[in-house]
Length: 230
Picture 1 (spheres, rainbow, N blue to C red):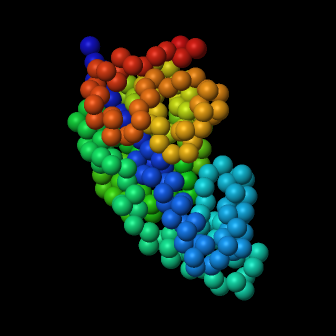
Picture 2 (cartoon, one colour; picture 1 turned 90 degrees about the horizontal axis):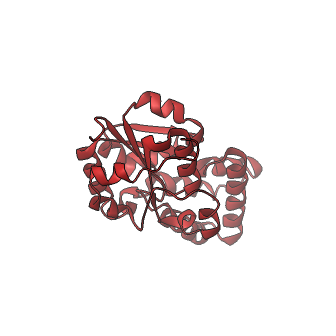
Picture 3 (cartoon, rainbow, N blue to C red; picture 1 turned 30 degrees about the horizontal axis):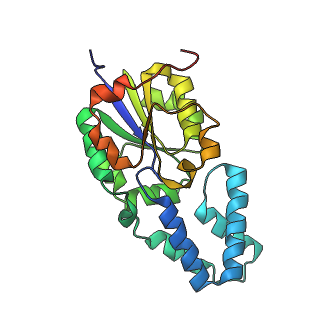
């Protein structure tokens, strides 16, 4: 017998949205508009913040750059690029079809990491906020907030889709056979072989998010393996 209530949790960056392409476009823009030296300084601040915070903070890196050099107005042009960027053009093929497919099988929800300004903007401007009917949770480190996630969206079974095997392993440890972990091999994290073999394998590995359209509910649920602590 299939579980009655199913919730699908989707990551955003490099799961539904081609964030690597967004970063590549930003790097090209920085090189063209503010020059190589300023671009290098921006990414230095970006990496400093990511190390401190544990997530990407593009606008925060701009602010840090400005604090270090308040008279350099060139970097302010980057804020316009980020805010006006056509995020909807960077959705992976059939991403919205996958969300609709999940809706026919259960309840789709976004669970993402990120800052409190740019990440919601990206989700809204890409059309994902509308596609998920506002069911969006953004945490600093979502793998540490799984109790809150489960409390907000109780279900008999979960399907968790993410491009980071580290996070999928944490989810499996927390929810055991109640969750099917799905790993779309998209983006730079997903193709890092060393990172992949550091953690237990996901229940399902797919080459692209669109492949999820080929899975029915019984196949997804039966793929859920127990964790070592189950």
